[in-house]
Image (cartoon, rainbow, N blue to C red):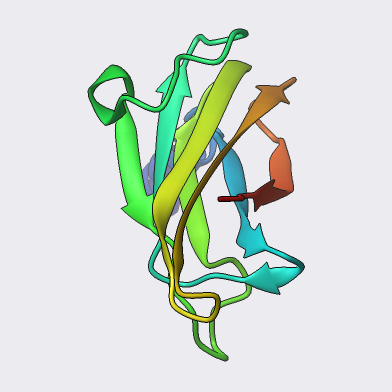
Length: 123
C-alpha cells in the first residue's frame, strides 16, 4: 500500500508541472513572377513596423529558402513571440537570370500563431 501511495504522489507531481511555453512560427515561400525561388536568403527583423531597408546587418536572424518535395515551407522561422516582424529576401533568380529582392511586414498576435506567407521579390 505504501508503494502505491509513493508511486501515486510521484505521478501526480509530474502531471502538475506547467507545460512548455508555446511559440509562434512564420513559414512561407519566396516568389518571383508567380514562381517559387529556391536559394534566396530570407532575413527576419524583430520589433519592426517600418521597413528596415535591404542592409542585412540590420536583421536579427536569417535562413535560406529551400526547395524540395518534402518541404511545405521553403523557409521557416520558429520560436517567435507576439509582435511585429519584417521579412526581407535577397538573392538571384536562376529561372529569370536576374537578382531579386523584396520585403514583407508580419504581425504575430499570439504564441500559437502559424503565419503562412508569400514573400514577393522583384528586380
